[in-house]
Image 1 (tube, rainbow, N blue to C red):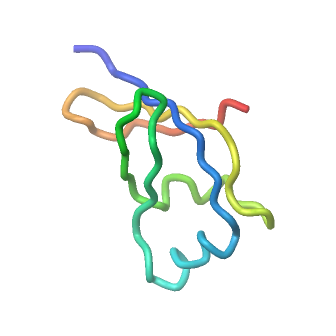
Image 2: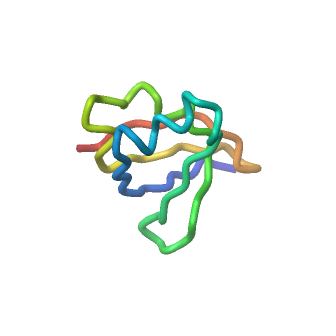
Length: 75
C-alpha cells in the first residue's frame, strides 16, 4: 500500500503557537483541501515558526495506517 499525502493551509499567529510552548496545547488542526479536519502533534510544524507565526501551504505524508512520515511547506 502506498503512502498518501494531505495538503492544507495553515495560518497561526505567534501567540496561538505560544500555547504549545506553555503546555496548553499539544496538537494543531487544520482543514485539508479535501474538506476533512486533520489534527496532528504541534511539534511537527514547530520548525516553521517565525516571529509572524506559522503561515503557508503544507503537505503531510502518511504511511498506511496514518503513520506520520513528514511534513513540508509548499509555498
